[in-house]
Image (cartoon, rainbow, N blue to C red; front, side):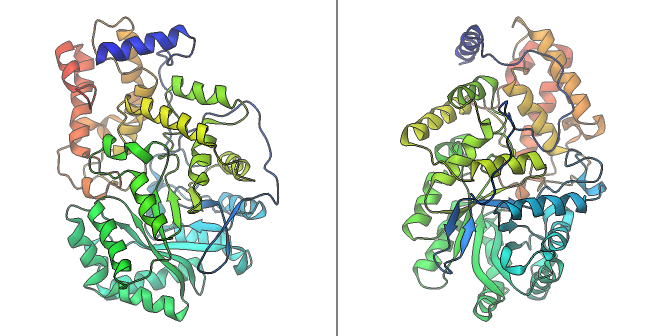
Length: 481
């Protein structure tokens, strides 16, 4: 397999579209940069594509604003330690104003986002606009055991209303059902035995909630159970939030056998006519930062638009999609996504097949499926888990993860990986400090075996430092060995 992989890369390099050379990587940002087209444009006003909520008849912008990664003072989203930084409220206001001016009306937040500050900052920004100009989506994020009692969960909901400065929530979600070590027990504890699902249904009947749904990550049995509850008449879901992109459509389970292909999730919603809200259209930026040969393919097909725009067009092409969420930390990300959806140019069948072929190639790179969501943080032992994975993936896609000392550019790539690692992740926060406590793993929406991957990377780094070829081949690549 390895010989085939190197032959393919050598062939691509011969065509002039090979992977990047081994210049030492810059400090890795927590918000990835999209591979941009050469021409900058201003998005048009009044051209946003809208989808109709079948329950309310309301027009929802196809682009939804995810308030998960808000800009911070002095460093608009690029610092790793958002818990130590102040959110730049002025920038949040500016970007929300610009989004609304250009037709965005769906804003998605949670009590858990930005270390508990997202709802507050979102409320400040939106309060400056008429209430009928926007839809608010937030979540029952009662992950911690101390928040799962009926009283604590109700207080969380009431606090959301206060922080967002609204009298009602347009789109209310059970947050990330299917997660945890025992997903079924956790679902029961968070929403059923404490009566919170019944409470939220009551709030919908009273009008304090307009639409009730759930977001799904993890155990497919929970997704199927939630839909079975509707089939049996126990509840009516007004919408469901799922992860959908051209990689996860057919390869989510192949990349990580704990996950479910989006093809199945979307089909189950579509046959019940439940509108789908889409999260992770870029997989935390990974589909905006494809390996160079794959990015070159997309840019050749459409030189006027970025690599990221293909992913957004893909997600928006499905007719059952109500809105596609994007965590647009920077104004340039907002502008580009506005252009893509103002209006949407749906992908043709041939273009869909083209992206499926790109996804098939991408799988061979064996990327760690980390979306940099930081749900695993903070680590009790101080590791910066997302930064470690982001650096590894970046080097992997750029060809700077040497697999054996005999390869021609081994010492170049070795230096690039190690120097970039020290720049991106402080030494005391690197993978070799993981003790395998496992506290992070239940919180990962991608269900990554985090301690296992950290230990593998730690062994790999040590093997690079000693140029031990036998150790290198034992720990890289992570899959298909």
